[in-house]
Image (cartoon, rainbow, N blue to C red):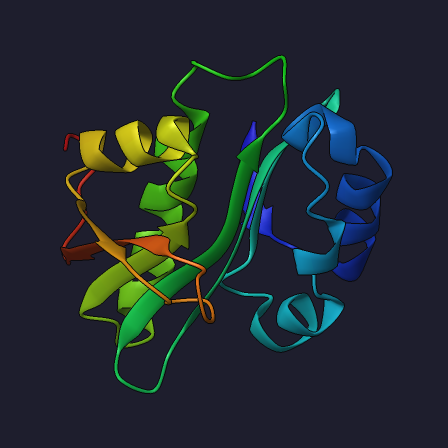
Length: 150
């Protein structure tokens, strides 16, 4: 399996197979082509002979934060360490572009994501109204470096 910069064609493939990555949750509206167009070098896909096993959409903000907008693994690859591998590859790419810290968010109901990010050493803070009035989010943060052994 190879971790490669994402392309617009990769994003189209992920959207065509959306249910394999997100199940019943419809997050297609969050898959912005412009992010891949503008930040393709920090948007990543995990490719193997059988297609895209996982992907990450991220970028580096002006305040030197490597922000992950989306990360998902295909239903038949969960529990294999692929999510950790994608985060590690992103952290390396973000740090090469000047990032000093990492950040992501999720909904408070996404207990799987919260446990996953905590296992990677992120702090998790629930912030009320983060995504608008009455829309809390769990904000994950951690400093770089981000090692594969963490």
